[in-house]
Length: 255
Image (cartoon, rainbow, N blue to C red; front, side, top):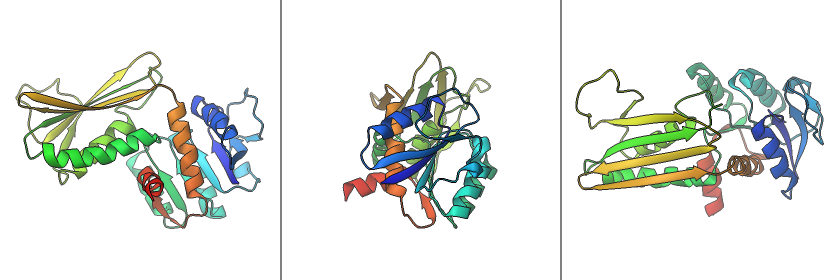
């Protein structure tokens, strides 16, 4: 049995993960962390993870970047692996995560969907063919109107996957409104749409002479991210200190 502490348990994603775990054999939530109450949970909920006394195998975090310090301290002090699903970390926070991974197992991913992570692998290989052929690359991401960070962590993750297939030669451009010039070939344009309740849409466009190839991922509900987070938590149980990604989870599934 994988015992989970769920940080951000009363948010939309937290409640979806709660449901997914209840339907998953071999996993259970033993405690939750959230300053916002009002939800009926089958487990105790604390304001801060430092208040948790329950025995656990892994922590899943779908809260906010501000909770990072407490999560890292808790994971290191108890040697409990962390699955960090929150986006919007600053460069300093990312550095703190990397440093903490020397003491505790940490999995961080901008997107927990199995589909997105398989797509990232495909994009790296596709770029090795399309980049030398002169294809321009654009990414368009769409999310609900409550999402605060832009561009999405997933869009940047996919851009990095593309860049990995081109020896990191591309720079990222988020706004061309101040420029009046032809499009340079050494950039990836990343465009953002916010509206309605779109769970998450991402299109990666390879535009060449006389042909366009588009790789698309559509999330129709938050359940795809919740399933990935639970899958990652099960994978992380008992892992040694180090930095892990969803690519490790995907690779483990291939074995």
